[in-house]
Amino acid sequence: MITLSIVIPVYNGASSIERLVNELAKIRVGGGLELVLVNDCSPDDSWRIIQRLVQEAPMAIVAVDLARNFGEHNAVMAGYSASSGQYVINIDDDFQNPPSEVVKLLDYAKAHPDLDVIYTKYERKRHSFFRNLGSRFNDAFARFLLDKPKGLYLSSFRCVNRFLCDEILRYTGPYPYIDGIILEHTQRIGTLQVVHAPRSEGRSSYTLRKLIRLWLFMFVNFSVMPLRISSIVGFVFSGSGFILALYVVFESLVRGNPQGWASIAAGILVFSGIQLLMLGLIGEYLGRLYLMQKGKPQYAVRTVLKAKVG
Image 1: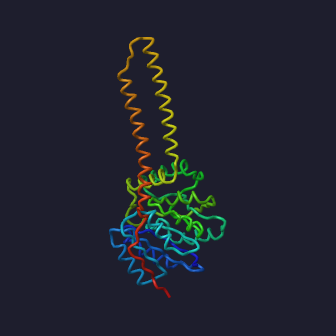
Image 2: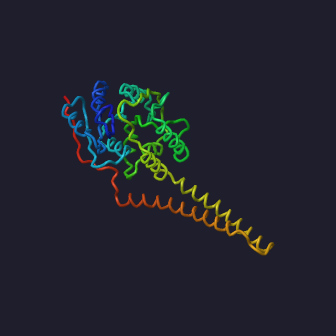
């Protein structure tokens, strides 16, 4: 088994992936190093460049071409499956995590063999305001839904050991949220502060739609807390409705003329809205269970190429 596998999901990375590979090729790791490039059906020339890199073989490379765009977490799962390292680090292709920090992260993981995963944290994040806002929102819900340790930043630049990588790969559902899977499997979590550089190429592929989709992965797939919240909200509104019914009866008996067509209409609208909301939430769970049951794929690999080094 080699020492380190570096997994890189590639999407619109044609302008940066070759430079990143050449930088990573300068790294020397005792026990061997391999690079796993996962092309997430990128619409640009990323796959053509990756094929050329495999032919030139600046280092040991495993290139995985997905049949369609599945999303970052699915692409990372495909990369984990193709990896063979004792440690697995995944890093984005935008140079916001300098390649030199890979050695720092690996050394820290090797110095702390009792830890299953090392998350990185930044003294200053260089994401856009919109991306930072989405991260804070996601972080708050992760603390509530996934029992995430306070102060832990769920960075995508992380290192997992072979044990945890194999445990992650046991999840075969179509909607992976890797941080959720990690938090379900281990409490042996470490953090390391690293440099976070400004984005050198292009802009983030995380749109509002993709951030919401990622949030739903965490919100629905890795916790039943939303259903418990639904039960509590339903109980509260049922109690409120019972109290309102008692008030209506009291008003009818004392005043002889029940008033408030407006309040009745408002009550119907409120309670009907709550019911529809809860039904929609239950429907979301059932829909995802249906897709899992019918075998919706987590990813589909079209081609796997391996560089012949040495």
